[in-house]
Image (cartoon, rainbow, N blue to C red; front, side, top):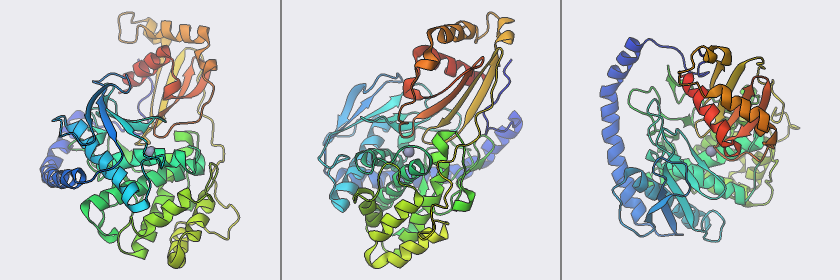
Length: 446
Ligand SMILES: [Zn+2]
């Protein structure tokens, strides 16, 4: 009945999948023990730190925000793992900005931070919605809950900092810089909590968010973009580490989670080249560039690189070389390919409903399509509601009503084709009917 499958999921026979899982389990057990010891260490470090106030809520598997408050700054552990992980991550992240960069909360004025965990059902994402941080529990297929990695907390808080400072637009090169800055300060936070120098960090984002058996060291690797995972279900890490390999296209707001690999690697090279700790060395330079006034909403890789060189002081040569090593040359006139319009999504017409979901913290692409004529042959099937929903959406003009808004960091982006009516909408602009449609169609492709 369904024609499409998630674009980066390869079909693997169940027996092979089980075998893959068993082989990996022994290694995973070891890794889990190490991760648990590390998590204990992080919790002890974080509770010793005070800062702006924060509150962690639970959405109790609904999509109601912010949900019920469970734990605030200064309160003891709650016993809910997701809540307590979020508490550890947010207090450590706020302390990084306050103690190292003298920035009080994301707005620089001590704004209280609201967080929500247990968002939605099987929700494989984390995002900043402009007012608060939101974390799902994973999809029970590939992803565990997103709070398991402290760096995910810092990544999301940094989106709020970027929004209130340079305001980098979340698309193309400015969007990839926005993403990269979140990964940069996420790595600084993780290494600071672990007391590591730049040369000793693992430079991985989301190392703990995968379920056992998934062949992934993390979601992204700042040291070696493109090598973080290679898994039958996930596909291969698509990040480039050099401007020559820049990926243009409409998905993921112009590949913001893909092309961030380029500035990510520049930061790693600068941090290791400068030596000492990442947050004190290169991190301070990147932070000064972010808030210094030279970086604005439309700044591209070259513009941002120039701002870091201005802020580099005695490390000018190291920082210049780091950018040159990833192909971003300061004397080159906008050689970058950011902003280029990619090919339009393939068009379907007639009686086919196609949904593509891109973006999200993981930057993955899922796609599925359903032929309504085939649905009509099975009036009792799971998709029985789909024709009625599609007809209503087209009649009420839900697609046309969705004016393109500023994309939100890490929110899913949907490309929809409902029997020839097409639209690209961020998640927060889906009507209830459209949300039901994308859920039905994507689930049918799993
Ligand atoms: Zn992000």
